[in-house]
Amino acid sequence: MSKFCPKCGAKEGDFYKGFCVKCYAELNDFLDVPKSIAVRRCHECKRIFVKNKFVNQTFGELEKIVKTKIKTTLFKPTFTFDLDDRDLLVTVHGSIDEAGFFPYQQTKRIPIEYKDAFCESCRKKSANYWESKIQIRHKEGSDDETILDRASQRIEKQVAYLAREDPEAEAFYGKHVREGIDLFFGSSRVAASVVQNMREQYKLRFEKSGQQWGVDANGKLQMRYTYCVRL
Ligand SMILES: [Zn+2]
Ligand SMILES: [Zn+2]
Image (cartoon, rainbow, N blue to C red; front, side, top):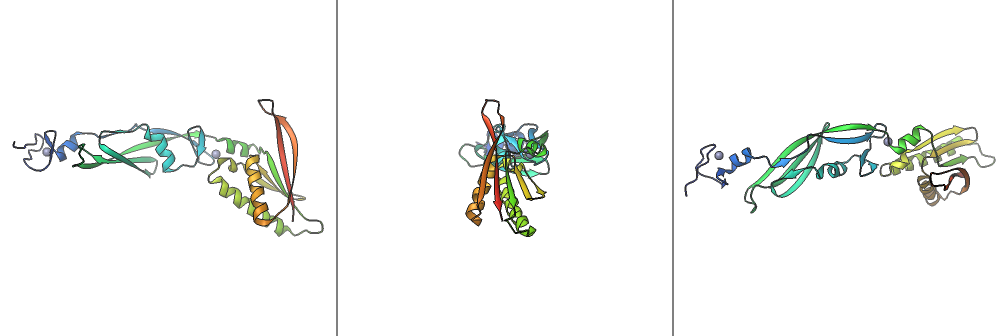
């Protein structure tokens, strides 16, 4: 059977469904993507909202948002994602035919529309909301400010480290007070883990005290905790 491509007139080479493969690929669109994707992003910490929570913006997370919305007619498809300015680039690799003789890839651009949001942690931070605080104080007879500053910096570093994975750690602020330094945490869980780390790493002794400060929506008592360390 003689081959003839009705589009370009080619008479030899690879053919698929009556066209030369090149023309077949040109005539078909193998990748279907949404016109744009809307992503809620916190204007403070730039975390994005995926599956009911704010997370760091990574390809993995953007992938979760778009993956359910893209379709391909290539066989054995795999997808790769890239970010270009405000657009997400989706590339599908696969083959035009089921047997895999004609590999092909197609790339499309999906503009990301960021919707302004304000995540819970940043909201807490801006309202100076706190659930636990660490008081760094002088030991009796000591007035060396650098010891307090150093401890505070160590804690700040830990919080920054935790915040890379845990948005709740974002709700954190510190202030100098007459007696020393106070560090405030929007999450008691985060404060407890920082204290635990400081105990293990620097063998510091923290005294813990609790204080009731309200009742939550379910009628449960809400506690605020204060940890005090003397250096
Ligand atoms: Zn052709
Ligand atoms: Zn935020």
